[in-house]
Length: 272
Image 1 (spheres, rainbow, N blue to C red):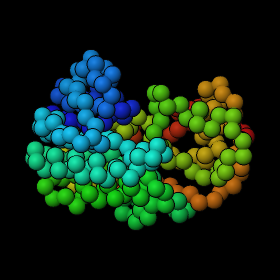
Image 2 (cartoon, helix red, strand yellow):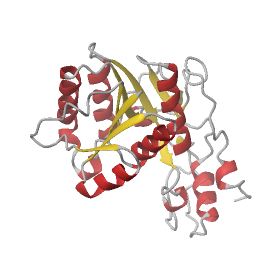
Image 3 (cartoon, rainbow, N blue to C red):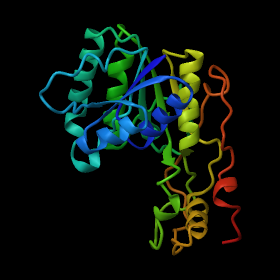
């Protein structure tokens, strides 16, 4: 099986290395010329691709069994406006080179904080700029009938190089401290993606979150304590929130989470 990963960042690069270790052929893209050598050394057939440039996308990259798209909208950097245009270019290339299967990496940020539990059948109603853009991006792929797309909506990403203890370390008066967290470890990001590939589950939407949702103040305080950082201080209040769950993982897609309880990773909390 040949997999092309558009966007070998934190998740894409780790996924590529895992797939290669299991005997798959992986093509990977980066926008940085400096990173081409890093990808190559890992056994990835590297491509320098910037979808924002007015250049033709390489056909060889799109010659694959599955195309995985993992490029964020980067709304905080002011790049959100061009995101849909970039993806339309990717879709045009996918059609031209006859890609048959696509995995598009999205985010649970497409769901608004409406103080409820959401599943894949819930109406997202995004309430942030990035959520609005990602939902529109999802629809570009699900509306396209020339290939089959599976959407994976990851929760907040944690794992090697992304220590949650640093997120709020030392900060004061952080609001909504009683709100539940919706996070996922890199190991399970990779595991769920592999399950889609190996079980040929295309044409669906997947919520990908660890099925444990401790309060934000507990999770981040304990994470900071584990990392030896200054403890954050939260306001003990519950405003708008959500719990993201999946009706697909474990049912339609057979997968058991590697991490089912965050305290196994950050340590069990003491009284606060």
